[in-house]
Image 1 (tube, rainbow, N blue to C red):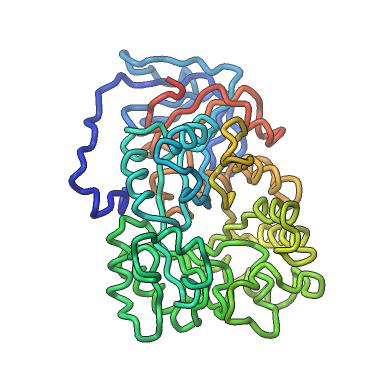
Image 2 (cartoon, one colour):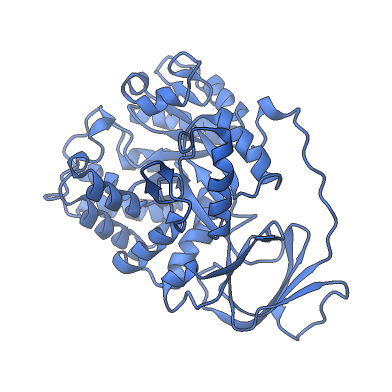
Length: 433
């Protein structure tokens, strides 16, 4: 896995892998994450961390030394991937992250993409999670680049770079026309980040320069759908791999786009139709380029309910409508919660609640035109692509990581059944152990 071990942790010891007999999951109903219909009576053989074979049960012999789990009457899906989380600040101490991450894993989430925070924390957590030293989803994370004014305006950026002058941390960099872009991207890459996130207060020209250089250095490019004043179309034309937040697509059809990102959730959702001509043209270009929409519709539903003054009137229904239209137009859409991954309560994440990626899938089905099979694909195959790991994760395919969820009820009939978890497999290991 590329870019998972940051420079500041290269001296840390990684636990040695222990040999284990093959694991054979037999007689399962398989939903493989590709968007294909469920297949009955399938066997999956796992060797080490990876899937060795997938075949019709009984069509070939099992390995002689295999541990066999008979899954007759149960359903097997790929491990879920929350493509948009923010772990930094979710807990007040390092000890608090252990139960949070364990809860995510046992709730079916085997990978997460952290979309900007304190990479000192994230690098440490990723090293332990990705080597199975910590019961946790695997973690990939971003290094954020924004215009200089963002760092003075946004307390989250300040909290994520404590101890560093604002805008100078390699994972929280201020970018100007005069910035040495190759050096800035190299510093971002040195944090162990898988991608750069372009967040706010950047021109279309700067978005293009950074995206081109990031790809040259082997990094993913993740942006807000509107970077202010850069429009969604500017990010797509620059080659962004994913663009985040469906409601921000409204700015593609706005007469002007302000330079201040703080208006981002206050688009004209009442007067700009989701199918306005500029938005339809944008979606057509996204499909052609394979740009992934990181929709996060649940985040805006929660925000409109809890802080209605912080979003524009009509944002929720508009978000559903444009996501439904994007799906109908063939745009790839992942599943991200834009949260710490769990519901919130007064004192932090609710360790008793199911991961919010389940809610995101619910909303894709209920409001955005997805079938349950398509919602599972969004939270598996497409989310794996969004995190830059499509070759290694996201479908139940020989050669990919053995990240799987065993369910007791059929999620193709009711997407809510993704919560009906018997056990989770990550890297070939069963949880809870």
